[in-house]
Length: 107
Image 1: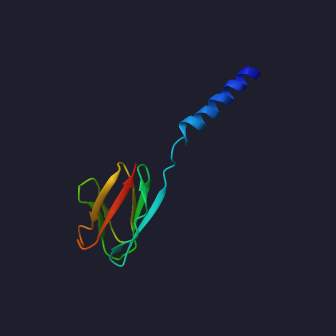
Image 2: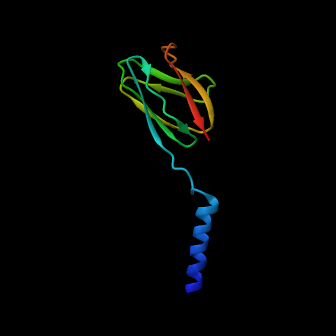
Image 3: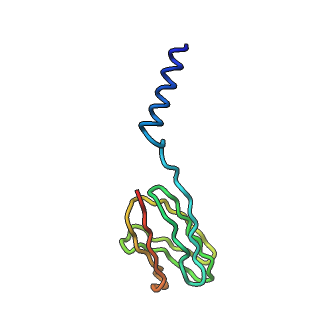
């Protein structure tokens, strides 16, 4: 049994050293819409989850200019989405086009 334990220990150690971190853990981010503005957009990575929360009394949307997402948010509602690909994506509110933002997603 002792040789098996050594082999398993060596494999685990090799995996940690050679493979680096097992896999990055997805983060959850809240972006709050209030006073007709999108809140601060945090640094993002593929796999992260964004919860868009509309704290306004008005209906809003979070609409990607490249059409990759379109989230409708009635007043006091929230919806989540998973970030699927790296790159910059500009977004706006269909109901209030002056409300804009950019997601900058790292791999």
